[in-house]
Length: 577
Image (cartoon, rainbow, N blue to C red; front, side, top):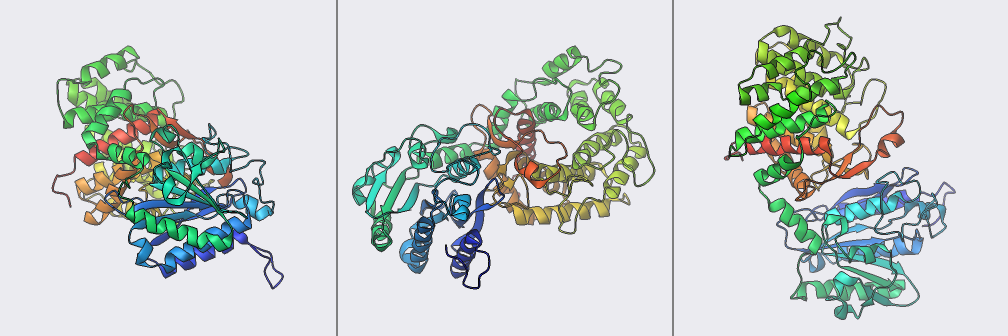
């Protein structure tokens, strides 16, 4: 990338984005703009995604082109040239190949002009598979973003382009069947991205074939032409093992996935917190939906009573809304066991809320009107109204919702009044809070229309930000932020409930299905999940939200939310469009 002729400041990453945007305009039905990561300095790792990259039924061979891991301008220019060649080929190439691309996997290296590591003391060319610190590694965030993003796109082939004085093809261990077609040698260089993708079970899925082409610019076109022409003629071409693993996860029924989650989550309440309470509720809902010999209510009631939940004061002096929402299952357990003490417990919790003057948040809500309290209050006060019929619970709830003032003109919610950031799960909390409120709010309630309007504005904003994978990013207005699990579950749950109960129409079905696709692919047979934002209080800057750790494995909050989503989706009428 060169200096601008007018003497201004060079912006090579902006130049890449502009070039990609031009390609997208040339082939709008083929590609969309995206980003697959964020560097320590806050630069996006730009990408373009083929229209079929996440379509399960698509039959074209999925190829992901990647370059610029060294941060060398000649590598990036070579990749952009390859994309131009592909776009110019029309259906000759695109008819059989779904090509996505990351032209510069190391933007910081390109910006510094060093042509090797990034600006943080790391090197995206090596260190694979990365371990830990997703996605807040001080030196090598790029490797974390690339590793997860590529594996869960699950292409059939990853093609790395490197500018070189000599022409050479290399194949990783998963691509040896393809090697003869381009005379590729076995890959050397342990710890490189392609080497790691080709071995073992990356990210718990399976290997991905990888080819690396090193060539001078004059030879890049002819060599790539060989590959593009070969792919549709290769009779043994098949989806990558990683893609097959995602296909298998996605093919499980909703009840099968719910039963996996049921076996892991909602079996304890220590401490009393919504993160485990939602799982308990989910188990009770699943049992009501699909009754069998394994009836969990007696076992749940036994361990809750043993934990002292029916004591005079199981919460102490200053419980938070998150603690109180740990008993949202009260009415459901009362119905399942015939023991009204559990619904009475929920009402006692609701009675801890204190009515306040308009403009203030009812204690124990955070006085700064956090989105978490939109969910906690909606869940607790709404259920208390359902149990008792006492309208004062709805008065506190609707006053809180309407007084918060943190929904912005774009439809999204700040985390709270003092944190003007569009955190993903924060907006998930807001959406679930609105959904819970609408669930219990009578049709003729004077606040219903305004709360429904808030919900629809938020949904419209979120749908515009939903990724082709079906997921939502951890920071919604930061392209490249990681695909976050809980936000997507919360969106899916709220939409499924709205469609089922009638305040949302059929136009929301497709975003709902797409969300389930992304979530179901990120739940394994043991109930482990992929990339749930860790517990997050109010942060002081966008960098802190970007750096929130991502949980990969067992996680109570995620498992419970996913169980709610699965059950609510299963409760939709079978003839839903």
